[in-house]
Image 1 (cartoon, one colour):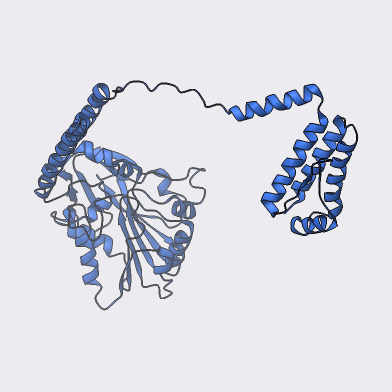
Image 2: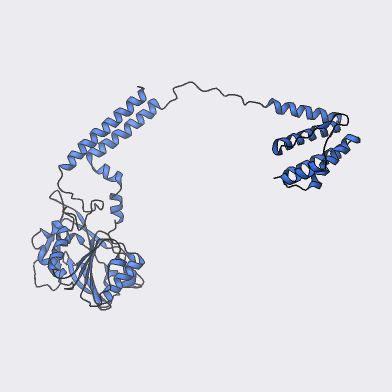
Amino acid sequence: MSNRSGILIVILAIALLVGIFTYYQDRNRRFDWDESSWLKRAYGETSDQPYGTLALYRLLENTHTGKTFTKIQRSLLRELPLDSSGQSSYVFIGAAMFLDSLANQQLLRFVAQGNTALIASKKMPPSLLQTLYGTGCDGTMPADFEKKEALVANFQIKNSEALDTFQLSYVVQNQAQPYDWLYFDAPFLCAVPDLEIGGYLNDSLVNFIRFKHGKGRFLLMSTPIVFTNYSLLRPGSMSYISEILAGLQPGNMFWDAASQAPAQDQMEAANPLTYILRQPALAWAWYLLVILSVLWVFFRGKRRQRIIPILTQNENSSYEFIRTIAHLHFKKRNYRGQCGIHMRLFLAQVRERYGFSVMFDPAFQLPKTDEAFFTRLALVSEVPAADIRAIFIQYSNTQQYEPNEMMMLSLHAAMEKFWKAAR
């Protein structure tokens, strides 16, 4: 076994041990406390993790018994019907929402029929905002929410009979962490007819708004974290969430699981290398792999065999011989001899390609041909018999008379014409 193979085996063994250690360490972790973990379905309706929405999904499913409860899984355009009764509701809970132009128009038509849409997202789709807000306030279109970092947030519904506020913290491993709480700033609170402020964050920051669209209403929230499994277990959460859900219609309900999309910060979190570096065991394995790779390149990357000598290119001596003979012929002006060589090469190619053998008259050095030969060669080669006959006539002239350079070139051109037209 070579040294290089031994090093590769060591590297693979170390990687395997680190993988086994990480696997068993992850198995011991019961909960995933990463609210931005889009790959692990944060805000997913099937996730029982702290920041999944399984509890809310089942709550809505159980409270709509007798009505149709539909989970949209593939396409908003195909699975969200235009309910003209005005008694249906649409719900989206997620970190970011993506709508293409067709899905955006379908949602707007659904609400315009008199239905209600509840959208709780940290990032609203630009296509929807552009339709709802038009040119915005003084030409300022709303885009991203404003944020305020705090350890604890107080939530309250405006004009609610329940005076108690609902407190919530972003928790990791049961420890409160600073969190960017999002709220609607000025561009979101104007330029929409009949806009109502539905709730506040920390007494003065708006996180819940309602406004009409056609015959229906949009309910928008900037803090989807209040709908997660962990939030529903906090004291006072059910009364707060019940106030929000009271704005939904009592009829059919559509839960949108198809429009979930990672926001920009979540896309960075979804990067495999980012995830690896956030896990201590995987991070050390990555650093070890990089260090070993650098050491291998430094110590084993050099050439370990002698340099292969440069071999000279093989020369074609036959080509040089032909060039020398041709040069001698031209130098002595032996045009008759060159014409004879041309004719013998021509007849050899005819014999090889078409199977016609032509004998030479030794007395006159002329090929023995007749009209039958010209006719048969014309049929198989599809070259006119007159052109074939012209070749032999020109060759006969070079043998009966003293040829010059022009006669030799004409004979060569006639032969080239034959081969270009031959089949």
